[in-house]
Amino acid sequence: MNELTITTDFTDIALPTDLAASQQLNRDLLTLVVALQARVKQLEAELTELKERLNDSSATSSNPPSRDTPEQRAQRERKPKSPLKRGGQPGHSKHERTLVEESRLDAIQHYYPEGCCRCGGHLVLETTPSQRHQVFDLPEVAYQVTEHRLYAGTCSCCGKRQVAELPEDIPSGQMGAGLISWITLMNGACRLSTRQIQLLLEEQWQLSFSSGAISEATAPVSRWLAPLYAQAGDAVRSSPVVNADETSHYRGREREWLWVMCSPQVVYFMTHYSRGKGAADELLGKFNGVLVTDQHGGYNHHPNERRQLCWAHIIRKFKKIAQRYGRAGILGKRLLRLARLIVHLHNRKLAGAYSDRLYRQRMDKLREAFRQTLVVGSGLRQAQHPDKPTKTANQCQRLRDDDLMLWTFLRHSGVPLTNNAAERAIRPYVIWRKTSFFSQSFRGDQFRPLILTIVETCKRLGISAYRIIRQACQQALAKKPVTVRLPIPPPQVLNPVTGLIAA
Image (cartoon, rainbow, N blue to C red):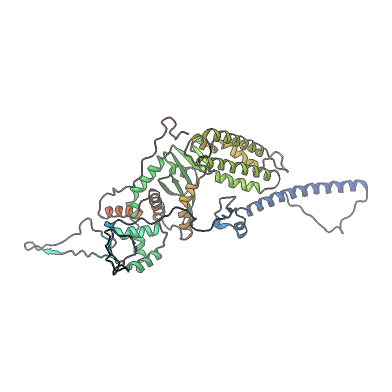
């Protein structure tokens, strides 16, 4: 719309002197009023949109909680305060540290009662101790240095000099498998910077290495651990149900993306320059199970009947709609209430509170009410443009189009309602990203997803990531093929008809 020129100085304006001039002035004023009304409606729409953006928080958008303002943090939904006191409650089961086996003890100290009984009698000692008290401590650590001396000899006949060579299993550098694995774990799992690792080496081990040497120590690790990384990718793609998500990743000032795909046993990360369908297809590969994600369009190549949308993301959208004025706000509150009832009913079913028949009956009623509310919402139109749908209408219509992906958990057992598993898997990297200068090279782009994949997968398998990394480094430094693998259990048996876990 063209800018309107409005004047408030009427001293120089000639008033009409006849009826025709008065009518023309009235027509001009009416035209101006109509234009001003249209302009007011446009400004009101822009103001509403700006207010909505200003009110965006972690509860209504994908913004992280750290970006919330103090006012938004104060308005967060809080769980009701428990009337119980902090700490263990009376009657709770006792938890104690399991005693270490006697064969693994470094030393045993025996203590016996002194003297005789108060009555003067002789004490008969028992053969087994009445109490076993174990004290754990850290030893004084010291590094080990092995010097390999190479000698030479001169032939008595031809005078040719020959020099001994290092055995193949001796590293050519100054760092052994244990030190390289420790540096790798400190950087990839504990998120320590090179300077912090350098300081820790000096404080704990009295070892002094330059920052360049520490950085170069992890250079070949990505190549050595590549077989384990590929194993994790193959394993997660053969799982019946996986969660997927993505977050921003930077190489210097260039924005890229870190993708994650996880199952209950395996977590697999991947960096890519794109957030589109090509990157999602590269992440999924030949995966043919149920995929749990948000509404990101990058996953749209995956069949709708084998995809579950995250209800936590949907609830956040409904919270945003509920904050709007008029019919949209009323509709958003109803959708929010229905969505929460659906999640609550599903959680109660998992807790064993409902039979399958009763669960299906109640879920069918909620599903029908949810669909009817979306139909009403998709019919909302803009006041100034009756032929154009509102933002709320577009969001409702999109959910109607994605209806099949909303209820996959009803068709297949074992499918979660939310994408929390992927959110939790990607959280360590998000924290790492906040405390580092991102990645500065292609080598860093390769190292981060690889070490995160191994560390997070080892957490889920309940094994030591350090031992796995050390075994791989030992084989590689000995110039042998890396044969160590992650003890990933075989995937669950899939339905031979659908290829999925049938409900």
